[in-house]
Length: 235
Length: 235
DNA sequence: ATTTTTAAGTGTAAATAAAACAATTAAAAC
DNA sequence: GTTTTAATTGTTTTATTTACACTTAAAAAT
Image 1 (cartoon, chains in turn brown, cyan, blue, red):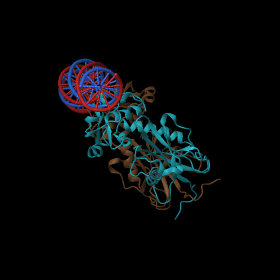
Image 2 (cartoon, protein in one colour; image 1 turned 135 degrees about the vertical axis):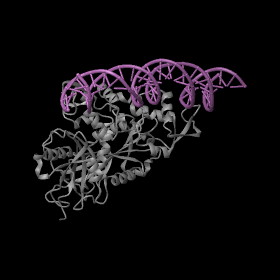
Image 3 (tube, rainbow over the protein chains, first blue to last red; image 1 turned 45 degrees about the vertical axis):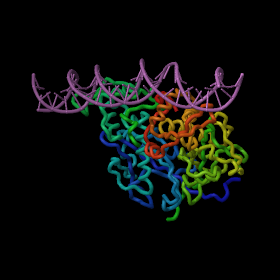
């Protein structure tokens, strides 16, 4: 036997929801779709899965193509499979969500896709079922970040506590008491204080911190609680 | 255009990890695979996705075939996609995990699959990458049940607090103080005490409770905390 | 009938964690 | 040197979680 008999075959694709943070707003990276149907419309970066690769490899390949970056935080989100989600032919697409340090990303690498960052609050209309993919990715990010220290993936290697707090506040659209916030994050043992300060945000300057990578990997799976009242937050 | 050009097409399947609880042990339902390759080996219940259905529909169809049951708790888990995971031809499989009330399930409905319940601790060897699927499903169940009230899906409509505690203890392989446990579950407002007792487990008998369905659906997305010290539990 | 056995049911105090709250300080700008 | 701005830091109060043991209902045994 070299094929299963009488089964319908289709295409498999991946679509990537790429999150970045510019210090103000949580954003996602969109491209202008380069082929029909819906050519020229805003779209998630995606592509077909090749015969010799799995979904993780496909999404990594596609992200590298667009951003030039390797080894970013990448997580399988959900597989979308409505028979008619792609009008051309049946295509089952697995959505991945990626977190990148927006500063590392260089536009010129992928000029052919005309990529642009859009604030989550001001997304353009997306093709197919990608709106739903983005909604799910937002929910997942909020869910996961309430419990695990993944937000660091959106920041540069050196960051300040006020920057980190801004990020949390913007993802959860809330405000957090800064005394309690800094107590909490420092109590995790994940941060190492640097000697230098970031002077860009204020006159006094704020000390840089770096991740303690050892503790980071060791504690990644344990629960955190950065967000006040997670009991009452609905995701 | 009526097809994408020069792309490789393949099969899509679903595989179901079906959990049940017999009062003692957490179990999963396996079948004897009915076709080659690996015919006659223990396997998850699964099947190919048809042209006119999405993955949720496919998994529901397959679960109905095996158990005769509709509308059980069912959640997409992860899509497994290594190019050679199925030796016959490329098949990308999406794993679903299902929670059912083991009492509702009737063996005779699906005699052709020779299904059997196996305690998680004593699983037979499974085909392909299904071992990995089961591992992931176990992790997901423990993760999710620590935060959301999904364990009720494994119990009959009327259950006792000691039964519920047994279930939690067996899923987390731990012991919980019964005073604290009952305080916690009653504090959720999810349980309605019945007049009758279950006399099967003890001389004195334990009062039955039922889910308050209104609160159940309303609070499903909020976090719970049934498990002592979730901060220190590693999933 | 009385006693024994078994698991169900229940309350309080101590410890820990989370929330509320405001004054001081570093450094640039003027 | 004075002003301005945001960073930094600690304590008190409140809420939650944990630890801990005796009483009771009901069947079974005598």
